Length: 225
Image 1 (cartoon, rainbow, N blue to C red):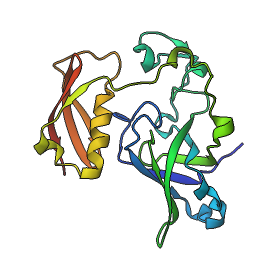
Image 2 (cartoon, one colour; image 1 turned 90 degrees about the horizontal axis):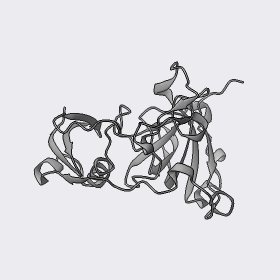
Image 3 (cartoon, helix red, strand yellow; image 1 turned 90 degrees about the vertical axis):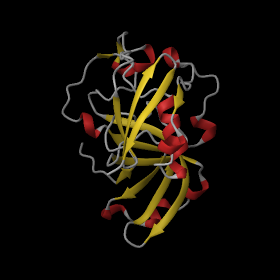
Image 4 (cartoon, rainbow, N blue to C red; image 1 turned 30 degrees about the vertical axis):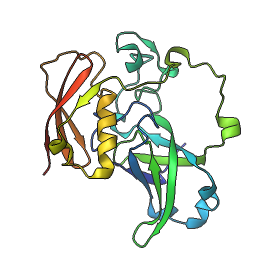
């Protein structure tokens, strides 16, 4: 079976570090789905405007070629407990496919890229290939009494973020809330606890440097090209 990407995601994450571990965890994150030329037919999206959310089926493109493992260490369990890969959303799978539910903000017809989708809450790196799009249908897709296993509790913001107004002003106003929420969810690997280590995260055309100790994260610098 061969699959061809129908679109690619344009997001503010040029690398994996810092990307939320689940879709819709940071609702303020904006991204765009841009269709490849062969699939820029607006008729394929007829009726999609009536749905508030959509499913994206995509490829863990940064993990292609990495051997899969039958057990992985989920960040939710601190990175210290192994679980079966099919009980997790790890990228190291036999077929590196991901599934994300995102909010559909709008559908725009552009002169150079055809019809594009504006989405919120995406957990996707810039350039991620998308293989299919399906509407989110609440009466079948939402299961209020479903069991969530070891991930039954929603991931909440863990850290208090200290970022001076002068540093925060280096980001456009519409991206500041997303940045603070990403940092509050603790983008560090779960097994990192070195309070002296300086971390680097690339986001929205800038590089953010920070340290974390206890329940506080301090932004040290924000550099822009």
